[in-house]
Length: 503
Image (cartoon, rainbow, N blue to C red; front, side, top):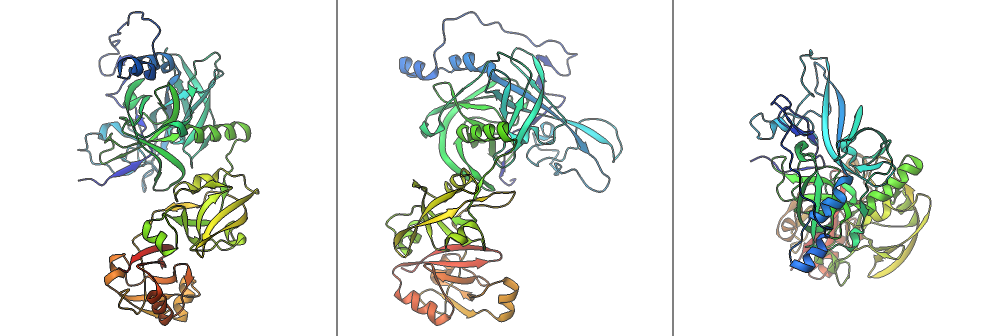
């Protein structure tokens, strides 16, 4: 079984078997059969249809807003070299059923581009297909940044077969949002909705061009909201079970009122095709990016300079909290905005400018939405009480900011039977090599510590937020603890709190 793949690249690549532009490839450009639908009365939005019949009918939505959904063709020139593959090339099994469809799919399949018999150093064209939608009648189009990444020529095709050469106004890779502009007037547009008003379990509809099949409509429900994904720290994704495939990238996700609430961006798959897990960028986040790109050409994001992890009940008990909420600070960047404001490992950030921080996945986007240089009030839980700190927000560059790290099963502990570890102080050489001023090195781990994931080689830095410098101090802290403790440990270059159940 192939490993699972989380890829933002639902971008199809034009190949010889794809159906596009009303023609069937390989059949001498014979026009595909056209079905003319009879005229009908004014179509209802799905919500109205569901109210009358109990079953949502998406035909009204498609008739009304389908013309504002576009097909995007992005042509690239892929450099071929004799001693290394291009950046987008990764080997793919020729027996894979999707082998012929992928020339570029989120870093997947090693295609060098289109056809041609050039030598190993020849430049070969590659054409990727994606989707987009018109947000203003004067020609602004939203899509995914990865759809147009490194494209030499971008073409936008409307449902009425008009085609326009598009200018890429800007592309923000961190949010995966790109803004295009075509030279046209009086264009059909979508209606922008509020994803915050949507609920898990509600129907949603996607329109796009999977594998180049223009204006394909698929539907499903919202499976989850504010979903954090690996290496995607600034976008609280909408998860759906809407069938989304390569080529759907950049297309709109509609609610039952016919409003766009997201941009389809990623799928989670073992094969590269749809397997029930699709992810969309909330449209309110995308609109912020669009406005910034149009106004300034780039996107400014705030930066706090901390690493955070999720809370669970064991950690909450360890820090004297009634419920597991907020974002637990596991490390603070030296000299960063948070460090200057006095934030410490072991603080639990519960609010930012009065807005609750429900969990670690919501904090990065909240921080990123603040303007660099502004002052923000950070509310933290420390020493079993709330404390407000004033932080001057930094500017995020292409680096980590308040990145949500998953709560971990990494750990360390002390010379104590209750905890189940044997430890020793760090040697001067270890402190110098690892840039650590304190800590206890775990030599053996069993019992409660081993169950929590603590292993030899971990370095224990703190217990329940209190720094630890000796085995005796660690033993004393464990003896005084209740049924659980939170150990701050360092493993390799990462720090994380590990909840340990002592019961």
